[in-house]
Image 1 (cartoon, one colour):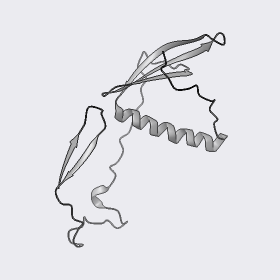
Image 2: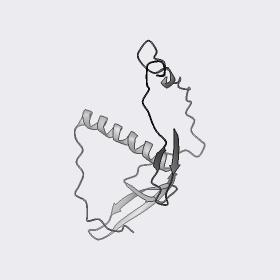
Image 3: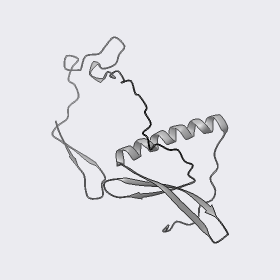
Length: 138
């Protein structure tokens, strides 16, 4: 069995399966099972001890604005604060931009979804304000 991985210009991954795939013909060719019924080859390795260390320039800040720019190679998140001085005037003060790989962006999305679900289970459903019609943001 041969797998070919290709990435077209739009950065959507595609997997092509070449050759004939056949299920295991008999128990003799099936990967061995451990006593608990899981595949021995799929055992989860022990997790390393993780030590969190803040860099000298580490800082925390509040953001109520996140802008996202995407290209083929990465996601760029720009954090800032938004202040509305009048009905027609909004000021965004950006203070940090962070690049993420598409894989890290997807992992972040998953973690945020899990944590928002846990938050809503504990404190109730979050309601979002009605959104303005879609269009370019400058």
